[in-house]
Length: 341
Image (cartoon, rainbow, N blue to C red):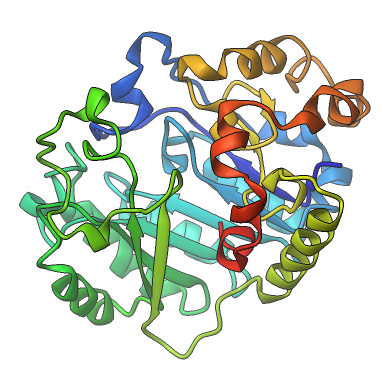
């Protein structure tokens, strides 16, 4: 059965950036700029379901949650409905005002996290991949949030590229200066050495240091603690690990049965077992049809979606491309894979 106590929600498919390896750039023809509103959360998900959820990660395949018009109201309602909820917000951080960040700071608490996705250390370097990002509003937002909230766990989240591979220590120093609690480095697989047809044999973004490239079909991450603050959700990781061990005994291979990745809800209200199956690439066409016709929360209550026979029949084959590459039994045996988002 799906583990649905962790939801990964795309509050908006809207973004101000033009990152070249994002689906917004890679499959622009099917992009729809949409967003969820507070009424959707209250009526289509509802307080009863929210009270049973342990964690919500706000991120998107196409968009950035901070550009959702109702985002502050949504976070406030979620935290009041379920005070124990662990909220994780992943954002590039551009173009929001100091007042907006101050309001968010008053909503979040010690159970929550914000990950600022920063690949550079100033406007020029950060714009090498995060095209159209705005370092001035990013830095202002980071400093404003810290001034009004010292409880929420804050992460500098970088991806290794050719342009920053020699400046990662410089990023860490700036992260310490800005009082971040952790520095997270992601090793991507989306480079020419792995996908030459998509990115070319001479991929300008690919690090020359091969140790900074993922060795598998999924990204790899390393996290360096910068403070003594304990990261929220430690008890959840133990639950995820226990579930991973149990499904291994049953010979299942889906990470969606564990909960660390989170079931995925996109900005159109479509429900998926994970964000990988929701990506707008052609190999996910079957998932897209299911989400549009049978698993859209605008038309069907979540309780009814869970009762669909799909989840006890075809779903358990785990035979789609995403399942067979990212969720093999070998991968699920890796504690980092089965406990980290």
